[in-house]
Image 1 (tube, rainbow, N blue to C red):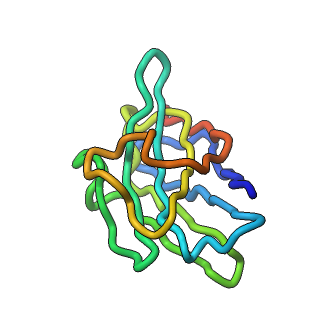
Image 2: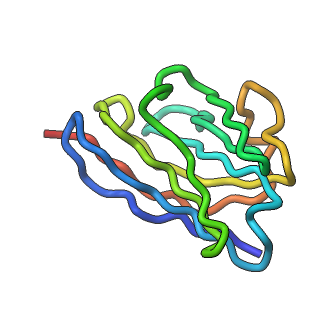
Length: 125
């Protein structure tokens, strides 16, 4: 049972990037999928989450209208689409999963028991 996050890289401000979270050993569409991020020297923060019914919870208003989660159930994966990236979005991004629902509205990492390794997103010109 594991999650694998990938897709990070260098992007210019205003650009887009797509991160993927692939699940193995379990069926991801029965789980809520969330993305967290951690910038150097800062605590890990929740970004957004999709429940198993694809209800979206934004843990931070800073990404509303710019970030979205999409599922590909055939591939047992979820995608984080990030548009209009800003320097403050630069961080290591982690995907996480928990059964069905997204947990607390605050986006606490302790709500999630399954974690993928991080993938680094660098936003710089």
